[in-house]
Structures are given as C-alpha cells and as structure tokens.
Length: 111
Image 1: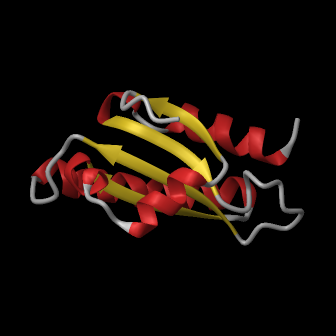
Image 2: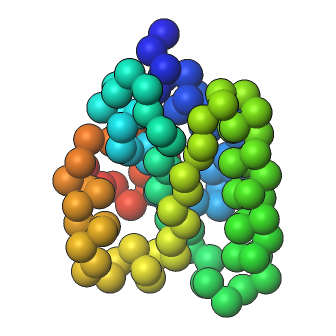
C-alpha cells in the first residue's frame, strides 16, 4: 500500500462525512513525492462561517491534525471552506481543482 493510500484511508476513517459536501487530498502526497512536507486536505461544508458549528468544526480539525501528525509524523494541512466560499471564482480553488486529487467525499459532483 502506498503512503497516499494509507493517508487517505486514515482521513476517510477519521472525518465525519455527514458534515462535508466535498473532501479531497491533493498536493505532493497525491503526486507520490518521496518525502512530502505535508498532506493537503480540502474540505467543503454547507455550514456558514459565522456559525457555532463552524467554530466547533475548526476545533475538530485541529484535533484531526494532531492525531494525523502523531500517526504519521507529517503535517495535515486543512483548507476548510463553506459551500459559498467554494463557489466563488478564486484562483486557488481553480488551480486546486485542476491538480491531481483523491476524492474522499464528492456530493458536489466535481471531476
């Protein structure tokens, strides 16, 4: 099993999929770089950024990052976006969507 498969399985097992519309791993881990400096994860949620649940989700993500580092000695870099933020025409999002990725949750039907 390749490292990216191990990482993506662990992430899939440890995120609450009902909270997310989209989740995917991208960056150096997906490109199978021998010594990646982090594992990039993009999460899109239907929650609004000013909600209490959003704040709770941010705290849960910090715990997820710590657990990931404990397991793999690799930083988990999480980009958490609301559905509204994701739908904005931002260059970061465009670039990320064009890059290789491993989809974990895809309720938005991206390719």
